[in-house]
Length: 615
Image (cartoon, rainbow, N blue to C red; front, top):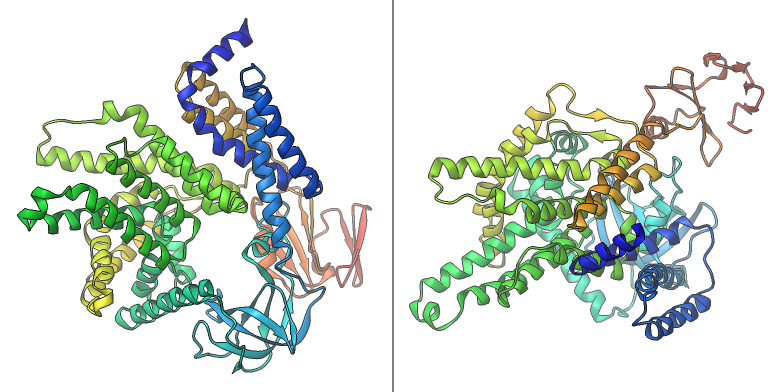
């Protein structure tokens, strides 16, 4: 009887079944990365065909529903397996660190955390031997080359690094799906070279876009002061490399780090401004206003303008998601359909996962879709209770700021588990930061960013950039004020993966269903929070090169021995511990079940390591 009631409740929510497609598809992608083995591709394709046969055969029977759910899960698994299979044929990691001659074409440029120029080289050759993939080389000298130029240099390269902490950020996997075969640094000057003219039309188009983005960044740097130029470049062309660590930390601690990454906020403003700008221009000509549907024409122009902005943004995940969703909104307006719904969000997620399934593991994908799913779900549930009629001016102002507070609260709660899992931090003053900055962003910065984009082809964007830069200067002061408050950046011990999965499952169950059984999601969230509290930190951490060792003390502090004083690794390891102390000499380390002399240390009679970190 119990299962029969569940089944009938499930059938009664048939309009919500579509919302679970990206969830099941993503589950298949997660299983691919979670399992230790991958069956041969031929077996996977044969199983895929067999599942299609079963779906056709059982399409009118009870077993069809669970079979279709398994089919979607398997489709996600197969999608990432196929893409990984073909990606392995595009790159080739070097077996060890080596110094070699390289010649290649500049595909992209950015800056390292220390401000050094990094070149992304494609069509790379080692003398006359072609090499697979992209080589990302950091230059120790200033360069004057443009994207698309062919260069040569001597560089030391190695394969990308593996995670520095258990379940930490896997740069090797991230680089693999970006097509990066090796990273390194130059050992000589960079010289012009001849790579031939074998570029495809697609490569030339991408080079043109990247050159345009680089030129815009250079123009912004010449027009505005450094900090203002860094922020404006980030929201104009998606170039965050100019943002200093101090400025980024200000925005993060003030709860405004999302403003530095082109996402729904920026794409929504740009699309809305384009929409109303076109309708305003058409209203100036009575013939066009009376004979044509200005709304539908404005929708088409807004989509095209948003696409141009997407190309300039560098097409990161939040920007692509925002473009897809805004395009679906305008498509709904063209066909007189509901513009904003969870179906739109889920369709955007499904399209992104289908094209780039590895993106699911990134923090940008998780934070972006967590926030927008929660906001749309909240809007669908409470839109009638939050609507006001006959608003006076003062009531309109009150409703605006109330909306900012509600939006910030919902987005903060939705993204909090991911912030803790990925970064181990929490910004308690994000409400204040968003409340102070929202009017400035909406009525000053973004409108003039839009106007600068409009007049960019006419070389008349400098006045608008200057005005936008003045708004960004005030925004920087707001973030400085908020981030200077006590406890503006709270470090929290990162939760484990099982805790995160339980919380996500509960949140999705709560947001995607409508019947009373959705409340079961609160139970899953509660269990996930409890599991997160009982997470055990590693007692021993050991670097891959064998030169750094970390040991947890009874006081939950981390004692790190590193002959070269690897403070960067120690800082990453310290997440979740009360503190970290780094020692260079064995005899200076505290006892804490550690017996040391000038040559070696023994920990609890379990293992011994020497001066070089060898076990």
